[in-house]
Length: 329
Ligand SMILES: NC(=O)c1ccc[n+]([C@@H]2O[C@H](COP(=O)([O-])OP(=O)(O)OC[C@H]3O[C@@H](n4cnc5c(N)ncnc54)[C@H](OP(=O)(O)O)[C@@H]3O)[C@@H](O)[C@H]2O)c1
Image 1 (cartoon, rainbow, N blue to C red):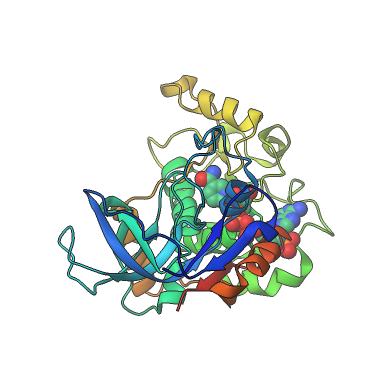
Image 2: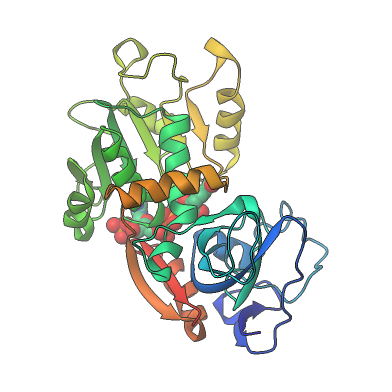
């Protein structure tokens, strides 16, 4: 089958497109998907570079060549898990499995859902990993609710573009942090205020925040805490966890914060690390938001599979404005 593959870890140049990649083996509890579009994520870059080989269990180099990509939209090749053959589905392949940038993928049934009917394959593929991350960070960890003042750092990229929309839909006052060229785009997505980090310091706000979501991952809790309201003046949901800070980047500080954040009751620390989980319920939640007009895909550029290396190169600039999507054809 046609697929992007890589045979060794390295830069974007290790990616190639072939027409004779072996089809993935069907497995129990999985569906076969004819992939129509796949979106890129920084995780794809980390996996391709071999940065995750310790945790991905691929230190010893098994299973080459590898097919990149975890976000997909496509059609079921045959009926599975209550879905009909031909059903349009989308989702995120969990963990370290990859395989979305190919004509065909085998996906666990719990990691896909019916596609939002109003979206094209290209639009739907742009949603899963990035939007799931922000949904889980804002809803589950920060318990965002009406009236909270929420700062989103790195708001104009894949994850941030959904965070702005989701936090605004949850009723928060959203302060988006990005560079000057993206200010208007953030307002269009629902931000109430925008801080251009090249001109102003988002950690010196006129009024402190109730929660800080560090999507870009360069403002650790030790710095961000000074911009957050003291506990007695915080707006938070009754019974909500004490988390007021979430980062996406799992460095040593973030992992320590996450361990403290998981302590029970009043012992719980205020800083958490979001670790995105693919699941049907949350994909259905996103679908409902899309169909209600509360969430829309944010796409920077769309490239054909043949240009997968160029797409990875662009993502690595860390300047993408929303998602980079690959059309499989
Ligand atoms: N833990 C998890 O489960 C999880 C899940 C998803 C993603 N992540 C991580 O989250 C991070 C963001 O992912 P993404 O998909 O949003 O990446 P992305 O799309 O590549 O982010 C690009 C954005 O970063 C912004 N940016 C660049 N430098 C910045 C700075 N100094 N301050 C603030 N913003 C800056 C850029 O905005 P400007 O051009 O305006 O500067 C650009 O719009 C990545 O590190 C990714 O690995 C983790």
